[in-house]
Length: 136
Image (cartoon, rainbow, N blue to C red; front, side, top):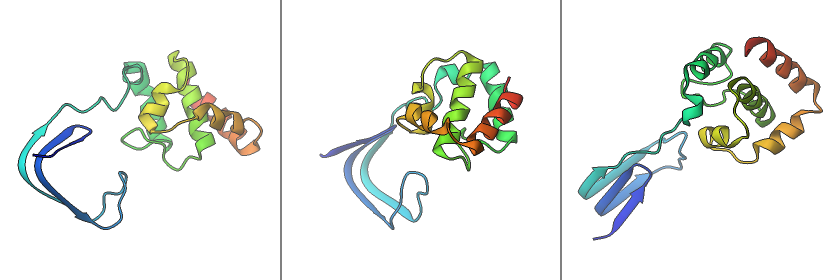
């Protein structure tokens, strides 16, 4: 039997996937039909441990109230530069060094470059000031 492994799910047997164009964020019009054994494997923890502390939860709540992140802690309506500013501020307040926890959570790469690009823009400067006021 063929075996297919996807994050958190392993299929053994025949698999038929049918659907319109879709991606991991929309998942529109997707039908999965399979015959065989389906077993659920533990999924990788979506939120890094350093971003799940009580202090982090308090900051995430503020970020949600401000409309910066959604209920899944994903950036909401932010440019890549603004998301990097948010990550930098959260990292500073929480004592997190580097970008890896945020890159993992947000499925991004090169956030350091996004942050560097934000440093010469008045709009992002205003956002950074707001972040400093709200996230202390």
